[in-house]
Image (cartoon, rainbow, N blue to C red; front, side, top):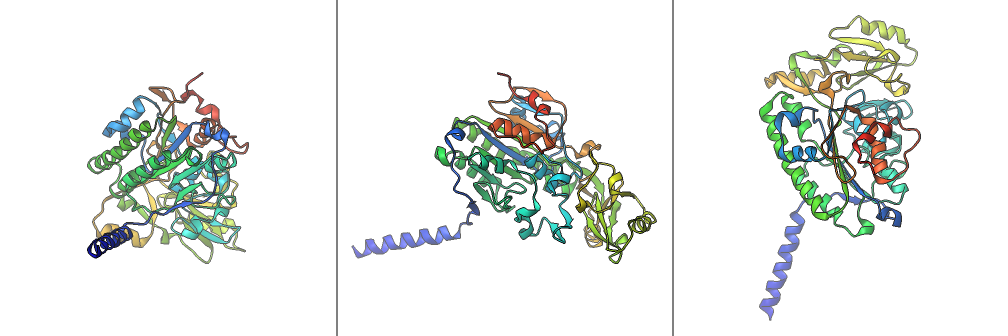
Length: 427
């Protein structure tokens, strides 16, 4: 009897120790939202972002699961990002249907005049501060409609935008394996009906990581990264099918990738003048904010004299924008490097050269360069089979998701449902 007790106690102790060694989940249930009767009858949408996935990668590397997904669903020739073609502004444009000028996330870094601070994506406090984020992201519209939502990473999903986050969300941790992301999403789809999310967002950084490190022309590295990612997507597709639920899967990317010789990096220090202006460097665009009592024309002329592989523009005349930028947080002057050149710090340039890195991948340029274009694929009961659409702008993804989930489409967005209706089956 005593021995059995000791053995039993020992097994319990071992179980406790082993469970404490497992990485703790950073899943947060932010609200008590449950699906309304109306929401229970609605279909499901999974929005998947494959960061940095250029428009031509599938054709080049032929990943089997993604290729089958496309062949039995729809694809656009490419997805055109908003300028600048950077990660944070474009993810949030996809989430809101608004251009960065309107939703306020202008770059991976930008100066906020209202707050008198510089937003940076590595600053956790800022990333989670909903007051930086304008618009009504898709999970917010879901919550308004009493629909459960979930996010396994997406720009803005960690922030309390208008006091709301997805019902379930994760704090970003790039170390979480793709297999674990897929597994948890499938677990969400197997929750009881009232708690089961009808909207799920996912994020994978594999192609962006590889493209930045090796450049988009390193076929060996990119193909390996894509085939590994494709295996994860295959597991997701199989698991979703097994649920028997009416799930529409939309796969997008925020931007493409261009090859860059490290000899073409421009040190940002070469143009800085802290006594005259604040410099916000996003590599492919540099926002210039003249200091108080410093004339804009004085700054403009100062920078014009230093033009080498970049051009200086007044913000309203800057190429790349599809509209006249009005947001004051852009600053009054923009520096735009020539395509194939890119701003960076002296420290990073030295590090790359010391490590004999000849080529890297970059993005952010004017979207007239097709290397900046991403992907738009979709498959599910709402979509046509084997259909190819022309290139579309990423502002139009949001109203399409609202249509699929039968949510109201806000009046103030830039996207237009008519631009994607041709991908849907007709009744």
